[in-house]
Length: 105
Image (cartoon, rainbow, N blue to C red):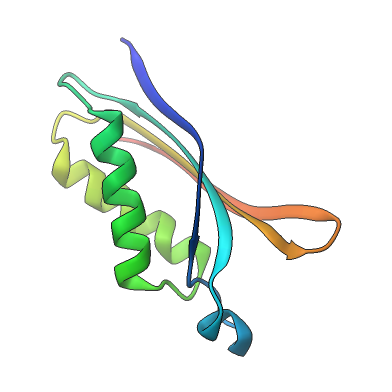
């Protein structure tokens, strides 16, 4: 099976629990991988991801990961594997931090 991937999709969004994170957008980097028995349009995946981040303004990275695991399974019913990594690029001065999820359906 062929995997479709998106690496290093960077954009600014509101995400986080801290007061300043709820007011000021921050740069995040998202990487994803999909395995499905149907066409997965990576341009559409990028649009959906950025739009949903900006509309939902997630409090926790972990909540965003669970949200997208459900969202993309509904969008691509034949999805058999979903991977997503969300990195906060600028929140810690000397590190890139975040979380990731791997779902096998």
